[in-house]
Image (cartoon, rainbow, N blue to C red; front, top):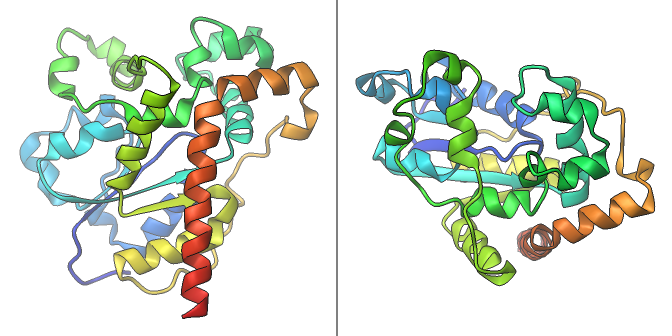
Length: 262
């Protein structure tokens, strides 16, 4: 485990991008006492502000609101994923988990319908770019008026991650790229082993040991199972995500090649 001082660490977890294994890596790297056990705003908001200082590792779906909330510097990293594969995985995840606020919709909708339904479209349409581009706000203010029962159903989380409105695709892409440029590392599910090595390097901790991905639930559906109409629909709805992904992974691979040549 890491025993020397580093900045506070934040894994900016975009849903369905390989986060569970990153959590395992952080468990191996930092003492449990230093890792915040919560990953959603409805949970974190219940912690007394004075108690937040006990943790220096945060991992979860806190978007860009966390640094403002903690009011301290953070070493931030994230993972991106192929947009079509991420969409399929997200749909299967929501359909599989009854506690998810949109489970009832996923249960009754095909993936193609899920992509365009007014209650679930935001979980598909340029999801990664929108997740990154969401403007920071004050979770305490946003949570005012929510009952304990509503928080138990993650209503604050829903509110805090619902996407902002952008005038066009170029504005969304620019905002997402600007956010990524502030991160210390951007990794990729498709380059997972290299990503973990890079995270280790950024955190100045021992080289990562091989991590099992046995805890990843097998999906009942894959990209190869999609019919042409559904595949085309997802691609049309994730064009900004694809541009963001392609640009970022090209830069990642170029850095990796450069490091090998050094």
